[in-house]
Image 1: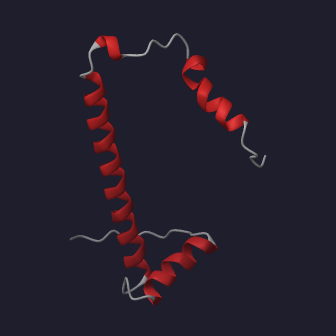
Image 2: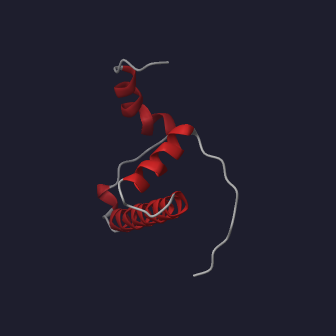
Length: 91
């Protein structure tokens, strides 16, 4: 496997996380921790994308009488907006 050397900057929290992974013995050094966690993130994204594609395909196979008509984006998001309006969210 080839290696590409690159200088990068991290927030204190991100560096501390990588350093903690090394201290726990998950990786031999910070560089390996960053590379390893990027590989984990990539697999997670690929899995989420595949699951979304499968779900979209499943829904596209539904008979037309099971589809819900949506006339506008506001109609589509009305339930979520109402739910969020009821939450005590920080600004």
